[in-house]
Every structure is written in structure tokens, then in C-alpha cells.
Length: 227
Image (cartoon, rainbow, N blue to C red; front, side, top):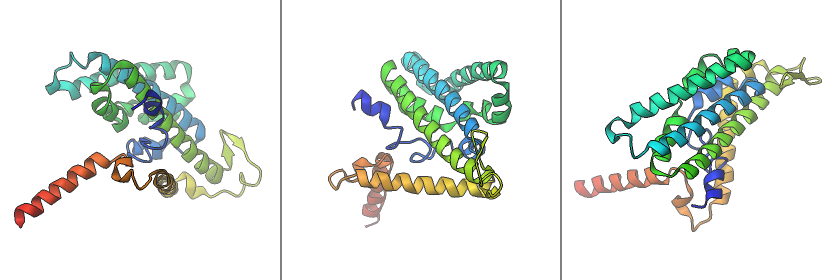
């Protein structure tokens, strides 16, 4: 895979939120305001980038049996630094993100990319993977938060919009509205991905191809054994 492909795959093809369905909890929680979405996206991207670089550098040193606890310790240290910086210089954003900022430590996107990619690849490729996944995560948050804020609050980045500021759909800022928008975005991305996949690509064009193939082989094996 070329480095451009590594960088861009996280935007649509393997978007961590809309395709891999990772990090859905903070996605739904902080996507009521666009400014909060931007803050969470940048914070998660910084943590993801620094984590991938650190784990890629230490991948031959960290014992395999304790790699997950080591990853969590590294992520926790980086998140603590980011949290302290936000508290010192962006206190309003720090308050808005609340508990979901320290919970980046156990965000499945961070640990997932550390385990699946950074622990098996070099520093540059791991950094590009982190940036691409971070951009994909941030864009998904911004789009979802913009829709929910515009129609739910009648504002966008805190700026009041004519008509919508007095005729808004308040359910959009609630959990049901978040799930509806989330489902629609997943459906749209799946539609776009299906258009990109040619007949020759088949299952190889899907981000979940490996797990589906493994499951199919297991089922086939069980069927043969019963026969």
C-alpha cells in the first residue's frame, strides 16, 4: 500500500467511526455542537499520532505478553498531557468535553490502531495512518455535529441562523436524534463505498474482509466436519 493510500484510507474507505464503527460513544456524546466536535477530533488525533509513533518506536522492545497494558500506560500519559494543556489554555472546551476527554485513554480507535497497525509497521507509516484516521474521525464528528447543531439548536459554531434559531428540532440534540443522524451517515458511506467497489474487487474491497473471510472459513469447516 502506498503512503498516500495509508494517509487517505481513514477518510472514507476505512473511516474509524462510519466504517469500522469505533469510538461511537464520544461521537454521539460530543456531536451536539460543532466546536466541541472540532476540539474532540483534534485532541483524539494528537493522541493517536503520538501513540502510534511511540508504539512503533517501541514495538520491538515491548514484550508481547504485556503489550496491551503497556499501550494503555502510554496512551494514558499522552492523554493526561493533552488534558492538562486544554485545561490551561482552552478551559471552556475542556469543560465542554468533560469526562469524554480522559476517556480517550480507552477509545477503541486509539488502541485498535496501536494493536493493528503501529505495532507492526515503521514510524512514518504509523504516523500517516494516525493522521488519516484522525482526519476521518474529525470529519465524521464535524459533519454529524453540524447537522445536529443546525437543525437542533438553530446555530452553527455558536452563530445563530435565521429562521432555524426559532424553529428548530430539539430532538436532534438528544440521543434519538444522534442515533438517527449516525445511522444515515453510515448508510451514505456504505453507498459510496459500494460504488467504488468493482466486481473484480469483491470482498477484497471491504474493510472487514479479513474477519468475514475467517468467519466463512470457520463455518465451512464446521459444515464439512458435520457432513
